Length: 146
Image (tube, rainbow, N blue to C red):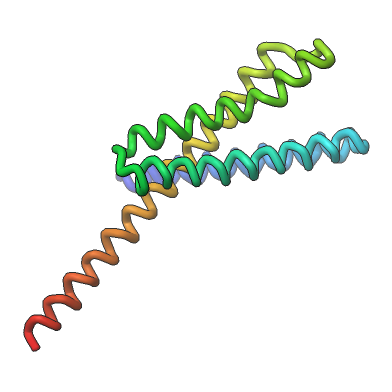
């Protein structure tokens, strides 16, 4: 029963996500302009930079510096917030046209999506690592027998 509920909830959330993407496409198509395309491309590039730097920072803190994963997650959180707020600060200082509500929406969404990706990537890498260690142990035990 619990699995059915969980599967149903996953389907609802994924369907809502699809609806959200469709709404964004509708908004872009209705308001199509060079400025919209520029903003989309700019935000995609910012997202790519945030994702790349966050992954590098996480790996550096967790794997290279051998710190607990909480430190790596905190580093990632701070990095996402800092880079996400940089364009806002630039536009605020240049044009004085942005609002704090917009900043909170941008940072909030970036944090939720970025930290979710970070968590699930970390969880998946731990699973791969565990499977690899299990296979190493199997190979080691068969080598020791011979």
